[in-house]
Image (cartoon, rainbow, N blue to C red):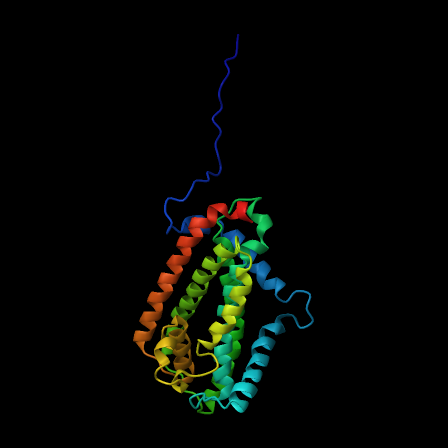
Length: 286
């Protein structure tokens, strides 16, 4: 009896299709690859202090030494006002917040060029890589933020700072800062894949951007004609909200936070748009 040839229909385990929209974020696909996200976060978090003498202590050394330098240079030599807040608490607040934003932005902008070998070998949602940077740096921020909380409690017991209920808005402020750094990071990561010299430009730009953000000075010290320019920076409302919530000082209003939220949403969507537009060419360009 002759056997008939049968055509076996293969059952594919994964079907890769082009995106249907430039603003689309496939949350379900990212959730499916959550194990990869956890692995990348763990790798980035562990390698930060692996094969070092002090280990995790470096999480505290960096903000402490930076704060001491700011106290000496800006607080004592330049005599910049801190709105009556103890200098250590004031500068540590700005340093902790700025370290998170700047490291997220710088590392996200170069994440694809540093992991180029992965892009051409295996498929995974490319958004996983910049997202892992933001999450891992958030863990580092949490460790350093505990140091800031300890300093706030110390000065609060002495009656030198006045925390208030705006502390409850901390999760929102952190999400806004993370979304802003992720949005800008996706924009620059899309550009640095093709234009490598953008990395040097970004590094220089981030350093200048710190002086356009109330990290080392309060908004109240600026002349009135310069305040609108500073308020245009969406980080201004976030930094001032943190200082007002934990230290009881700073020029802050809910309207500033609404403006900051709107700008962050626009930057984030613009980052998603540019990221999705150039994502399909990442492997070929790198």
